[in-house]
Length: 346
Ligand SMILES: N[C@@H](CCC(=O)N[C@@H](CS)C(=O)NCC(=O)O)C(=O)O
Image (cartoon, rainbow, N blue to C red; front, top):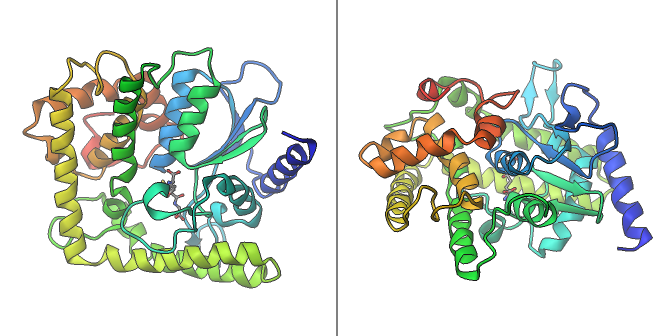
């Protein structure tokens, strides 16, 4: 990396961090000494993509500078008017756009109920984003961040097996979870079986309208920055498409059926290996992402999908008790708000 790249990353980070001042939410995690850590992570407590990355950091025992962001736009909570989500702030979006260049993907401007970069394109206005100061590089997208951390923190036990066939099997499971329509079940109003906790239903009732209002205001305030405006415009297009899906009964039925298939396939995968983990005897990246994914479904009231599948039930017990999943997801200091569905897990 040349000096110009080093300076570019450093000044993008500095500009992003100026917008994030709360000492409670911008702090060192796991660091034993006072040196600035190698990694800086922009994330959110409730975001499953962030949970995957935090779980990998916990597995690796790595120190990082944590920027825990407010990713909901709000009215009347922090101020009388609209407070845009921190992940929409210009400094953060510019930092993320820099990282996004390496992905070589168009901006996502449609919605299929998923958030995989591989199938949907790149969203410049979301978390998580990682800065690795040693290289230096900005990595956007949880799948890539997790792989990056696993590769770079070489002194810890690898989460991707060295053996080629084993590594392919793990990557396959990671891709399945990455493509799972998690946003569709979090944001979506199922017409006759909406089991989400009440506060989620409440938040989701105007979530898309607030997103669009905040993004439009940011376009006005930053009209001179064409790149930023393009990023905000694609985000508006994507969120308007999301709004349609959230209230579409056919889509909601189809997503629920797809979730059932995904869990049935997990059961078959568990049956195909001696266990105890999803790809065999070793805990791998596949278990990190499955742990996060299953806990989210559980929290949303969808654990009934594995009521009749003893193997999946036993696997959830194992993976929920993995210290990294406890620490980064279930007991994370700004926890997912309590859900009646996970009282037995906590
Ligand atoms: N493919 C991306 C998806 C990131 C993503 O969609 N993040 C969500 C939280 S899990 C987010 O920041 N949403 C806020 C918003 O859309 O305004 C990844 O895995 O990192």
